[in-house]
Image (cartoon, rainbow, N blue to C red):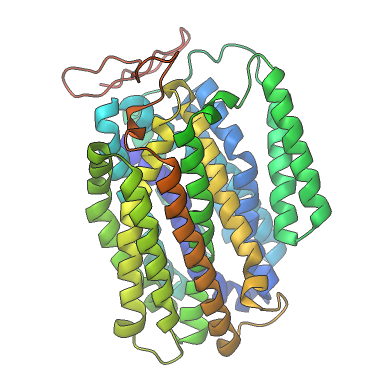
Amino acid sequence: MLLATVLGSGVAALDATIVTIALPRIAGDLDADLAGVQWVSNGYLLSLASLILLGGALGDRYGRRRVFLVGVVWFAAASLLCGAAPSVGWLVAGRLLQGIGGALLTPGSLAIIDAAFVRQDRGAAIGMWSGLGGVATAVGPFAGGWLVELSWRWAFLVNLPVAAAVVAVALRHVPESRDPGATGPLDLPGAVLGAAGLALTTFGLAERNLLLGLGGLTVLAAFVVVEQRTSSPMLPLGVFSNRAFVGANLTTLVVYAGLGVAFFLLGLVLQAALGYPPLAAGAATLPITGLMLVLSARAGRLAQRIGPRWPMTVGPLVVACGLLLYLRVQPGASYLTAVLPAVVVFGLGLSLTVAPLTATVLASAEEAHAGVASGVNNAVARTAQLLAVAAIPLVARLDPGASLEAGPLVAGFHRVVVAAAALVALGGVVALLTISSDALAGPATDGGPPHDHREPCVHCSVASPPLAPTTTSRPAA
């Protein structure tokens, strides 16, 4: 089950990092400027951020495994379109479609884990998911470098065999689960307003169009009103009554904004400014792979034992230090003295942050709403990344229509990593002020103590939430 969920969410993360390495080749082959390169990234993030909340709600209602598999197949089909794109416009269209698939599969992967493991094992399970998913993210640049040496189109076509493997494993090993309370009609007004509000807001941010941004915020306000009044809301607003849930999402907002700008520019800087070939640029971040693989599950267990507050506070501060070390990156600089120290410190902080953050988000919501909780957190993360990438020309003082030249690119990169370090450090402060040490104990109900809602399987400590009468899934154990 972990293999299926890691590969499923990992294919989206892998694609994002591979595409980052492929951007210089895409720009050269399709004659794209900085604005075109931005939209190759932003097109995916736009549709993902707009629809990921709906994806989580659909999984809770119609079956998390079912919606997860639909997302995987959709993502693979869109990847094929991207790999065959004859122009930047077609590539951006394919990326928009990829985002829809990502919105269906990403929240489902975490909700499946949350539904299958009892609370005392969930921190370690999410740590394994984070670590192995982090490996997919970190392997992306290395694999991308090797594939882009052949053709940038392989950055997208590689998703097809991975998606086929996910479908095969999930059909055999992943149990079905859903929210047994989701019995009313689908909240279509909420779904439309939520998607439209997120789309208008993020598009307005990406294009720096104040009118569109304000229109999006107005639609989101209408979405909140509708969700308050409907009997079967897509987003139960009660999840925001939990301080840990709000704090974890605020932490996600600032941390992922900082990570988004750094990852977007690093591949460009290593290739366009330092002269690295794609394979070397991808291999430069491999230490993050090892650190995430070795440390993420341990970080999840640590958070389960001492609480998530201090890992979520210290981790972002360490990430911020790693980002500041990127200031040593200059044309002609040595990898060992300039790039490697930044990558190692960055990876240590990321390993300490991701699993406790993810576990806190899920633990602070009722298990029945695991898909929605994951969808909210993913929407926050992707919107933060989209905002950050959209702000790069302004922060870096780069002309969106300019070519990618070494001198201005490195100077802009330095400005960006300073801003990113400040944002990520702010995330640590937010976690310190909003996350309690017992946040992983779960939400209290009716003023009583936290509870799990489920009886564990005595043989393997795996359980499923109560399923709706119409469920025909295989048992979890």
